[in-house]
Image 1 (cartoon, rainbow, N blue to C red):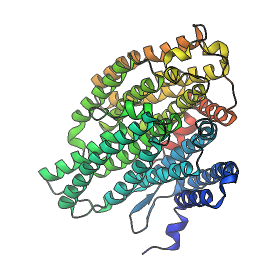
Image 2: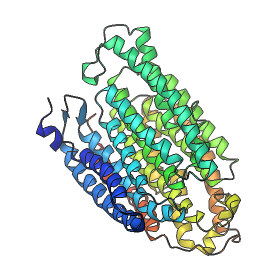
Image 3: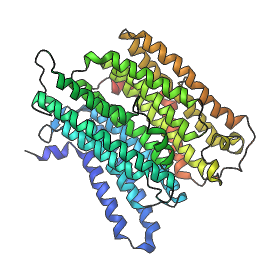
Image 4: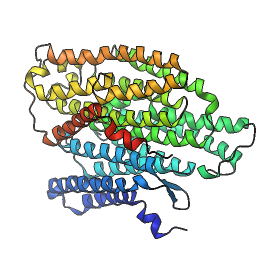
Length: 476
């Protein structure tokens, strides 16, 4: 039975649900001749509502309970994950206004789809049942399918949406079949009702592997990473930034709960091998890329490999390492795509857009943007004293502590390989003559979003304890 306390303990979720519905209504209420006013109203209203959701999420840090008939969990872990996701969403909203106006796709339904995707992410994180996990995953995915093709007049965007949809629909079948097999063994899909009786049944193992396969697809890990470069390149740059950072964060958060609830102890070696292959593929293929979005796409594959190291043996220390890495990853990955979106406006030739050649000399024409992008790239490379360095340090440390030294050494070596393609972009910006004119900063909101990300990376890099002290209180 649902009670009032259920609602009072799910305020951030309810705020996002109402926000998604209200933004749809606002778009239809305003007449066509006042569309600019309506989009501006939606923009500011969205910032206020998401900020309120973040504030209410801090109140959940001390809770540990189940709501809505044990279908939803509220505890320190879900609160931290919600703060991460909503914080990343706030940065995305800030950077969206200028980009949408520039691309002539400034429609209110963009924000509605954005919030429905975030609703799905929050459901995935707070799910205490496989059915809720499935609903959240599909709500996020369907929203992303539409957002990937939001520039519907461009064939690359349409191609991106279609590829993502077809492959995503195929993986959904794996996910549902896995849930059915787990239900057949346990007699329940609820995490609290799981039982183990001696030797695990073969069909139960197959069910676990099928659900794990769906997660592998969502995080873009080897061997199901083939969709990422094309989808990330064709989708609107701001959407790409959100999918590759916040979307992946939600998938990893759901994986932590899933791994903690079900018996995955006997596939540690398999996860280690997948992790290494993912790091190897992402870093090696990124070396030959000449398009910034494709390069960052392969980089995101490599980072999925680094994060998977924490799942080899999912101890409390490993969970803390994964959470810190996700904080850094959202800020540096999202920030890099925000800068890429800002630079796009100043490239008149479509064929040159997002090419590494167009980044030549940006350090001379606009040092402000170049400094910020340099910070993001150095953090992605794991250079101290930025947050990305500590993220990798904690991840590799957990592998060593759990006797997977060979995985940590492989990860460190491949991380050094990755430094090359990040440094290559930095060299293009600072040591070549400009090929385009001066970059005009008419994107004050995007600049503010990028500045927020830079501040977060720098502060958490210098004082990692600022968030580590909250992460260490996590209860899964």
